[in-house]
Image (tube, rainbow, N blue to C red; front, side, top):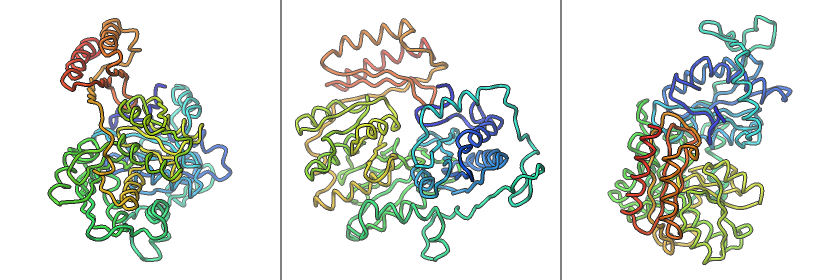
Length: 477
């Protein structure tokens, strides 16, 4: 698809699919398409800490209101939190404004159906047809927007509804704040994962949280304090520019350093919108999504709770995990990259868990979305029940050396049609036959070509990756 990637729409702010005119059109298409089948259509919008989120929210709000859709604003919240609210509030659509792990100059749109799941491909295709239809005129232009909330429309339609009472996400014990819809996610998730008595840890247990200066900066420290542990939060002061900047799940060095200096028992590093997490054990060793799958699958299988003794991974899942699982009587099923493909396979076959090395993990018994908070809470629960450290739980699994190289590209033509790239790819496949893997693909959200090479020797796979990167840069750079 041209507009929707592996995780919704993403672009540089004020360019391409994030131009104000396109966003206006997108809002009206959402209202006319997704919301049209609902008797009293209503939408909920959330965003991460990027400063561009407010202006994007305003454009979408006005466009939806012009289509007679009532709009609630959840303010700053994680992507899985917004999905949870969309389901609990029975909204026609949930709209998350975020570019996830990308730097601040990017932003994006993720859409959720009333069941809390990302909208399916058939709806995305239908929306793309309408969005690419040049004959569809713009409804609102600069200076010409729907009337303020509560005022009648010029055409005599119902007044626009704007309820901004959801914006405060920091927990408070006052009855008024507990009634806020956004507080429901904060209150419910620890109970869903840990049970009614959430204080499973002692104050002497120290947890480090890297909030990536993003959507979880306010909410995560309070949520994890409910476990009874001492929480040490870093990178939770957004200045409008520092989301994901040398912190968060793509830069776990900050987490490792803090875990060691604070002598913490475990650390969790989230991304900007909170749907993924990377861990650090008590010795500062970084543990990615493959380790989460290894630990959780073994825990569930021992309790006969791993459905069909199967775990869903992707083409990026390390082969060492597949081989380790085979020795435990667990099957690994692979999908294309993207948590929506992982979820599709899980729903189709009724599997318990699935995820990606990047830290997108889905525990179907708790949520149908990747949720960094849920993943971290599950890990804490396993540590408590097994009375083991994360380092001890990680024993028995060692990843094969793997390198990922991202090459900026100016266009994304089919890779198999570019002769020099195809020849270099075939050459590496022949070299690695039986001794490693090569996965070559475009990013679904950025103008990048991603090279993943896995083998027994890190220096060797590095040299192969750099050679292929040179060919791609010369052909598409």
